[in-house]
Every structure is written in C-alpha cells, then in structure tokens.
Length: 83
Image (cartoon, rainbow, N blue to C red; front, side):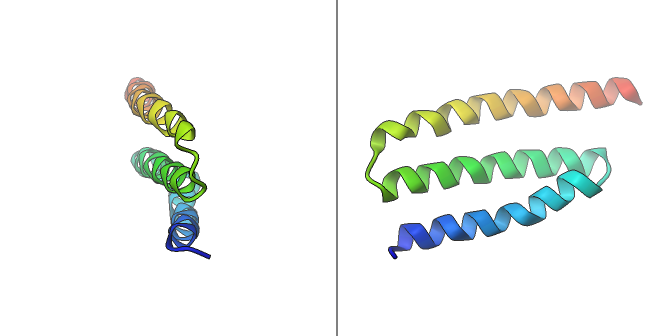
C-alpha cells in the first residue's frame, strides 16, 4: 500500500464526522458538514486518480468542485427563506 492509498483511507475516515454533522445538526451545522464533505470528496478523488495513475479522472473532482459550491449556496438560500 502506498502513501496515496493511506491518504485515501484517511480522507474516508474524515468523512464520518462530516456525515454526523450533516445528519444530526442544526441547519448551519448541516451546511458546514455538506461543504466540508464535498471538499474531502474532491481531495479523495484527486488522490485516488493520482494513486492509480489515471490523470483523465481529474475532470470529475473539478466538476464536483464547481457543483458543490453552487449546491452550498442554494442550500443556504433555501434555509434563509425558511426562517
């Protein structure tokens, strides 16, 4: 197992607290959990694509970065209207 695989496992383990915050928190904690989890997934996908030497797979984390930013903004907008 290389260092890249170890980093991928570490990123997977770091997703657990983000999921807990996204499920059991208030609306602000859910947003923080969502944004943090999306950042971790982007880093995880980059590490995995480099670890398996598939640089063509770097397009997916780039697209996910752009979409997760917009998703966070939309989520905040809907929660502001609900209050």
